[in-house]
Image 1: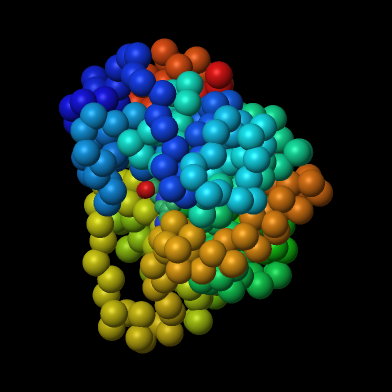
Image 2: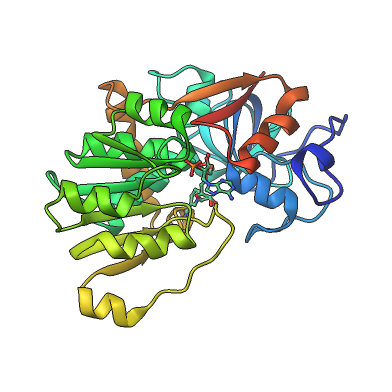
Length: 322
Ligand SMILES: NC(=O)c1ccc[n+]([C@@H]2O[C@H](COP(=O)([O-])OP(=O)(O)OC[C@H]3O[C@@H](n4cnc5c(N)ncnc54)[C@H](OP(=O)(O)O)[C@@H]3O)[C@@H](O)[C@H]2O)c1
């Protein structure tokens, strides 16, 4: 894409030269690339990372290594890997670049589309729930946008951690999806007040952990049903409003507000990220987690697919598959 705007307007299918791997980079033949809300924000120029134009979008992918940058060890041509792309050579293409610090072995349990969607949502969920919020078995976890990309992963990871999971979704179709994902209770936020449901289910105590990729009013309402010593994970602002926190409220109710930027761990704590991937791979092998791939698209259909993600109408992950 060479201009910014809505995905359907600015993403064009074009022939470009094959990218060349530099130091610390791998060239992969793309097997699958999952569409993230962040890709849509990047198309609009609203994401924190703003690549120079033109660039090929697609932050998350599964690929087969076809060439290694100079001096790389620990990876081999032919390896099937997952992780993030090295922009400007993103995953919505035949070939992409990946950085070695954010590339991991693809779990054997998954096909290419599932593997492509097993990085961002699951590392974000695992690091958020375990590293940041210290979710404990038996605690109540409230997940917003529970049928979405990161939300569906958080529901599965919350159940795998032994929590009681309450999912909030927008509309009946998403209600069905979140129920099938394993949420103990699902709230349709279009017709029900999640604050009342959480209070009822916890005898007034509230949720121990809130996983919030939506923000705005959803965050503000969540502070009305957070438990004593609860933890609110600020994951994203898909609703379009960046909320402010009332710190006097956090003080009087004794709760924590935790920022989460999963990608920082790759540089700040690479050993933890490797351990996280190993844990996730075990959960995958045991059948405890599995990405929900709702659509498998050819390259020419990706712009419309990413537009649906941007519009908030998709469930799980929409994946480009080669
Ligand atoms: N902090 C991190 O490290 C990190 C990592 C990954 C993603 N994120 C963030 O997490 C958020 C979700 O990402 P995702 O890729 O998983 O997206 P997604 O959940 O697949 O889609 C976003 C969901 O948010 C809800 N939503 C509410 N208001 C919306 C609006 N005005 N427009 C669009 N959606 C709206 C919708 O679910 P309902 O209809 O059910 O409400 C929608 O399905 C994004 O803000 C992303 O940037 C953060």
